[in-house]
Structure formats: C-alpha cells, structure tokens
Image 1 (cartoon, helix red, strand yellow):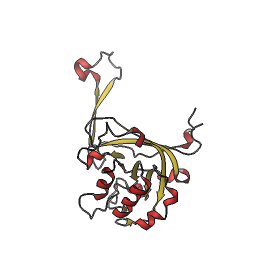
Image 2: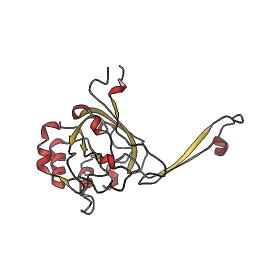
Image 3: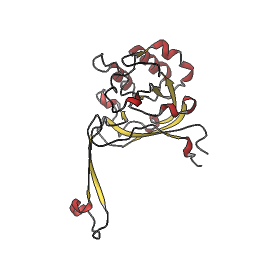
Length: 228
C-alpha cells in the first residue's frame, strides 16, 4: 500500500508563535540548558530542544466534550475511531458574517451526508484567518445542528470558520448539543475547497494528553485514489 501525495490535502493552518489569536510561545535552546537531561556535544555542534507554551485552542484545533460538558471525554479518552473516517464537505460559501445555516438548507444537502460521516462546513472564512475580519462568521442555527446530530449521527463536526456558534447567543448551545452526544468539534479548518467531490478520507490526530479540553491538531484528507 502506498500514498499518492498529490491526493493529500493539508486541512490545518500554520501555527506561528506570536501571531496566533491564542497564546503560542516557543523557546528554542541548546540542550546543555537541560542540565542532567541534556547530552554532551562538541563545541559548534547544533543540538537544540524547545519549550512550548500555548493555549489548547491555538490554531486549527479539535474540541472534546470536556470543553463544555462536565465529565466529558478529554484528549486522552476521546475515541480514535471518531477522528478517522470519511468526511463530507457541505458548501455554504455564499453565507456572510453573522448569517446562519438553516435547517432547510441542511436538509437540502441530506443526500450528501452519510450516517457516521465527519461533517465539515465550508464557508471560505479561512481566507480571513489572522485578519480583523476573522470574526464574526457564518454559523449553524441550533435547530439545524440538532437535526444534523440526530438524523446523521456524525462522528465529528468542523468548520473553516472559527466556530459553529452564533456569537449573539449566550453559553454556546451548539457546543453543548455536540458534546452531550459525545461529538467533537473542529474549528479553523482550511483548504476545504481542495477536497475533491466534497468527500475524502480524513485523519484528525491530536496529542493524547490527559485532562485537556482541546488540542491543536494537524488534519489531513486523502482524496479518492490517494491510497494505491
């Protein structure tokens, strides 16, 4: 089995220290600074390590039920099988900031969604990443999301905008709706336009850290024909 990398799509933004909307700092240093954990090396030999301090919501990230559901799964316990699988991309690129995706609009795309899919919402608001216009963004209306969760039972839901919530509504009800059903949310995706025919095999692989509510993640999609 081989991978045709011309069929592989990067769905995560670059993470740039000091330029993220959430905290990301990198301290690169010579391993001598590790003390007893360091290793001796000859003068002039490049041998470094780094400390990272960052928000769990930095960059493209996956949010687990723990984020908005007491006792919900964290990054360590969230099922791996919910983060690998077929994804469908729903095109809502005509939506504007503060405009909701309605239940009728989602129902109109029902045939595109298979039960158990990972569902990605494409708005093309990833083009506004790191600009003053990254918020507000299109969102999913609450009844529309409830319909999607209950009829299609997606394994995870993501958007190339920075959230699926209506910023004018308190307490993030869409997060609660997802997390109460054990469904993770991916925020700030990119390159959804490169998924061919709006379907691909997707891998979402966060760090397996106990006790964190969310985690920056590198997500890749493999278009049809990419595994040979």
